[in-house]
Amino acid sequence: MARTPHLYALVDGNNFYVSCERVFDPTLEGRPVVVLSNNDGCAVARSDEAKALGIKMGEPHFQIRDLLKRHGGLALSSNYTLYADMSRRMMSVIAGYSPEQEVYSIDESFLRFNGFRHWDLTEHAMRMRHQVRQWTGIPVGVGIGPTKTLAKFANRLAKKHPDFKAFGVCNLEDLPPWRQVRYFSEVDVQDVWGIGPRWAAKLRELGIRSAQDLKMADAQTLRQRFSVVLERTIRELNGIACIPLEEAPPPKKQIVSSRSFGHLLTTRADLLEAVSTYAARAAVKLRHEGQAAGGIQVFVSTNPFIPGEPQYHPAVLVSFSSPTHDTARLIQAARGGLNRIFKAGFRYKKAGVMLVELVPRTVRQGELFGLESAPDDDRRNRLLAALDSINARMGKGSLLFAAEGSRPSWAMRRERLTPGYTSEWEGLVVGKA
DNA sequence: TCTGGGGTCCTAGGACCC
DNA sequence: TCTGGGGTCCTAGGACCC
Image (tube, rainbow, N blue to C red; front, top):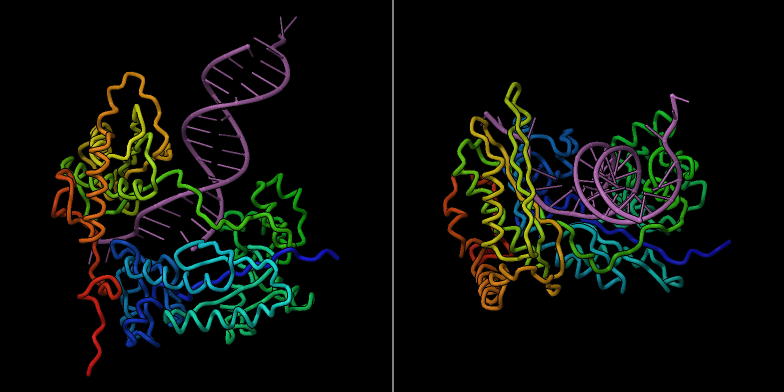
C-alpha cells in the first residue's frame, strides 16, 4: 500500500466571534449569545447555548430577539476590528506547529505535516489546542486527515461528535477502517466541504445521502452530471489530494465594497455619497494589495424582502483608459456610474462598488495618448500613501474625501457594539485593585 | 421597524476569426 | 433540400466557500 505523502490539519475557532467577545466579557459565559451581521441584520455566529435554542445561522435578528430575551441571552453587533486582531494572534500561535500554514479564513487555518511521520500528531494537536487557548483565550477544534477535505471532515467530528468533543481533536489516521465507515455514514452529504444545498438535493435524487455514499460514488460519472469540482471532492474523500495548500494568498482578482443602508434611500445625493464612500474604502484595500484597477462596477438595489415593492437592481461597469489606484479617480468614476443607473421613484436598500481587472501596480500599461498618466504620478502616490498611513495611525475616517460626506444619515446600524478591547486605549479592560 | 458582506471557480453560449 | 470546423475570448449565470 502506498504511503500517504502528507497529512493535513484543519484548526478552527469554536463559534469564533462569540468566543472573541467572551474573552473580554466573562459574563457572556454560559449564556446564549449571538453576533450579528453588519447593520445588526442577522445572526452570523452563535454560542452553543444559542444553537441549543434552535437559532439558525443567518436568522434575522428581529425573529430571534424575543427568544434570546426569554433565555437571558444577548445579541451583539459585529466588532470586526476585534475579531481580526484576535485572529492574527491565534494564527501566529498555530504557525508554531508546522512550517507549512495556510490561513484559510478569519477563524480557520490549514497546516501540512510533511516529515512528521514519526510524530504523534494527535498529541501534537492537543498541545497546540491547549496553547492557543492559554495564549489567546480562544477554544479551537482540530481535524487531521490525508487531504484538506478529510481534515475538514475530521474537524467536524472533533467539534460535533460525542466520541471526540471532549478532546476537540480528531485524527482519522487513528481510526480503523470500520470506524471510519461508521462516521462517514453518519454525516449528511451536505456537510461535506464543497457540497452546498443545491448539489446536496441533486445528489439525494441519485440516492447519495451520506458522506460515505459520496465517497463510494463514481467520480467520472458525477463529473458529467455536475462538474470537475465534485469529482475533486470525491477523490479528496478517498485520500487523493487534489486541493493544494496555499501558503501565500494569491493576488485578489476583484475587490468589493458594499453595504445595506440603515434605512431606505430615495435621493441621488444620498446614493452618490454612499458609492463615494464605498469607492474610497475599496481604494484603500486596493493600495494595500499593491494593485490598480482597470474598471469599477457600480450597483444599487431595492429591498427584495418587501412584498409588492417595485424592484430595480441595475449595475454598470466604468472602464479606465489606464489602471488606477487613485481614490479621486475611483470616486469620480463611481459617481459617473451611479448617475448612469440612478432612477428616481425607487427606494434603495443597498449599494456597492466592485473593482475589477486588477493588475499589480508595478505594471504600467503604456497610455495611448498619454493624457491620463498625470494623476498616477509620483507626487500623487506620495499623497495617497500619506493618506493611508494617517488613517491607519489615527483611525479610519480621520481623513476623508469630501464626496464621502462626514455624517451620513444612511450609515449602518451597530447598536450593540462592544469596545475595541485590543485596538483602542479606551477599550482596555481595567481590573479592579 | 427589522433579512450580511466578500470572495472564487466552472460552464455554457455567443461573437468573432481563419 | 442544402448552410464547415475549430479555436479563442468574453460574459452571464450558477454553484460553492467563510
